[in-house]
Image (tube, rainbow over all chains, first blue to last red):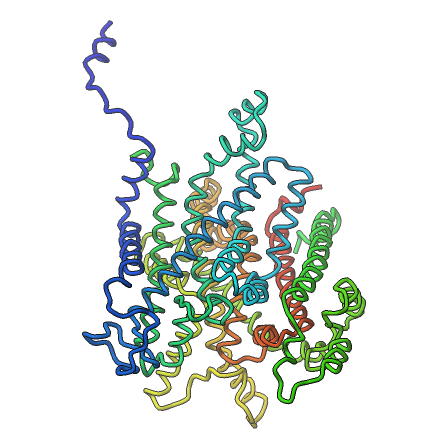
Length: 299
Length: 340
């Protein structure tokens, strides 16, 4: 009898916080990840609001100011033909960001589809899909994109997004496959299977939600990777083509002047590194926040 | 070397490796054939002769393209079979300028391999050591500093790192008024001197390209190695090893690092892909006349046979690194040796 009395007198515990709340709280407690997120927001503002703030357009040529150092008129100086570096950098950042985001969504989607199918169906489907994955891995993707991309100029940078996405999903797919293999044997998936639920429905409703945290983290990291690939390709002339600009083409233009006219090079190069760094920090923070086995979970 | 004798008598290791090798041969075949078809479809060798002054007559362009075997008026299957027939006999055909691809391949092979080998060895060894070291010193200042540095390196694309190193070298040479750091090409032109002068000259030229190829690998391997090492450091058997009074060094190296290296073998084979791509950029930026530079130039010239030759080189090196990773895995993981 006494036990029930004590139980009744115990203060009513607050209902456990929902998953989203817990993840958000844990993410916000991680200072480096939070700093990364703030930097990302600022960069997005620079890329999408910046072009409206400056009076110059990225392609406009100011003949009165060639190779001008940063001043009140041209905030980040001008390049060797008199284009405003701030306007160009904002525009290039915008292009690089859009490409990075689209590629990440595309490649993570592809990876989860192929990986989950290979893991779930097993047998020859698995063997064929994994052979295909290995085949794509054998080539450094840069080589294939470099061959194909310049021929697709007419369709613009969308083709570049497709190509980058097509060659960025393989390693993720392998991880998804092995996660699916272990999920497949879990009770709830078996129960669904014995109830007659179709394989794609099971993958969509039971497998993918259970690896969602990995996919979110991976997509974040992929944004950084995609921007790095895009800038590298554009640097060598295989990516974004003039008159369009991306961080890669800007770095290519500014390289020769890096020592003499540093502003033509270091704004674009610096923003590239800062952006990828911020993405990696956010990805790392997400990993800690989403992982139930991480330190200080349940808080 | 006890395990080797065991392995040969029981012999699952050679069987495992032979199986992997067969799989790799199949992958290589498929990859090279696919790259020939892709390059033939995407590149247009005819364009190389277009717009010349004086214009080259169509008949002679056709004649030349037929000689090389890349005429787009020959059906693709015919071109492919002809190329394949030569390739299996070790003849990779002719470049678009009519010279032998094999000769060019041989000339550039050494240059690229030197960069790739030094980069891989330095990147792997340094990455593993740095990762294991930071794991042992978890959350101390040195661990945090290395973590921050590797995050910064992982956020710098290789081509940008190479440019930054080169710019730094130019700046350094200008400020000090010396040419201590050499960064163009793989050797000084017209250098005379004994064997050691040549070796020293090559080593100086290797410095910056190797750094730009390897630093990314050091950063990424050390992150993974730190994670796997931390898992091992927290394990029961390591505590047991310590409890029975083994020296700290033995515990960390023989029980800790050896086990923590096993999952790394997968990362090594993936990491080499990134390293290879990075080497392509690095060669072009530092003016090394290697495979990567050849590749970039060949695409510009619509040179199908050369492009395929570089793809072959890429596929072979990537598969070799995968095979080496398999050997490492078999050497470290007793489960493979005992599987029957």
